Length: 270
Ligand SMILES: NC(=O)c1ccc[n+]([C@@H]2O[C@H](COP(=O)([O-])OP(=O)(O)OC[C@H]3O[C@@H](n4cnc5c(N)ncnc54)[C@H](OP(=O)(O)O)[C@@H]3O)[C@@H](O)[C@H]2O)c1
Image (cartoon, rainbow, N blue to C red; front, side, top):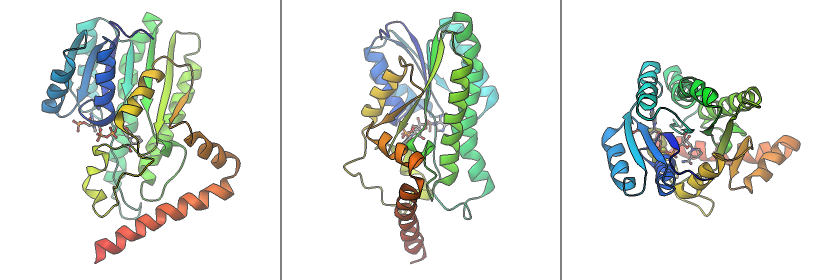
């Protein structure tokens, strides 16, 4: 797709996958809007991409805050008059057993990862429908297909995102607006810097992706008619097996992640 002059709004653009996506859209001469809470980080990204992007805009916004999202979307529409691509990427994860997490910790992940995506979608969708053109890219996770011990409440946010996206995609049929979910496996970003990941083995493995690899999938998704792009595509085999042979794959996943969880609990106690 030719992204030249397209208005691309990326939430969670201050680091990781969002930042990598911003750089790639900028290199395609898009107009890139960077959204996140840490303004100084966004300004650094803006500096990095301004040599390529057709134009840029920094919007400091907490996507879990409805009124901040409304203000942010009004600013973007006032500035550019339109939105072509919305990348709902902002998210975070808190590690721990459901029995250990507080209700507020569980709620907060849903508020950012799921409702943040809803607030952005609800504010920008009417403009896309009016334009009869637009694409929403929702960054979920392979955790949208597997409930994993230690991140059950995070997985729930991504299951919710995938289900919402599927329903919305059906609703938008024939409108010129579409939705695609990008679901990566583990990516080397600051997502795991949250204090709850202390004592968690964060070592990159051969399967750990670079944010740039996921950013390539985000750009592909912005021009795809698919519901979901899994990164790497080989992980589709695991999802297929889970749907068709859950009695085989679920115990493998459960055992592997339970071991990690109990290793962490014993480290915490010692
Ligand atoms: N890393 C992985 O292994 C992995 C795997 C699958 C899916 N994902 C998903 O990929 C997305 C991006 O994560 P990442 O891996 O790139 O991690 P990251 O480097 O920590 O980036 C997360 C981004 O989200 C922003 N953010 C968090 N809460 C926000 C809020 N309330 N309002 C606005 N922005 C907020 C952060 O910016 P500020 O702190 O400046 O607000 C940051 O830019 C997330 O949705 C994550 O669930 C990651």
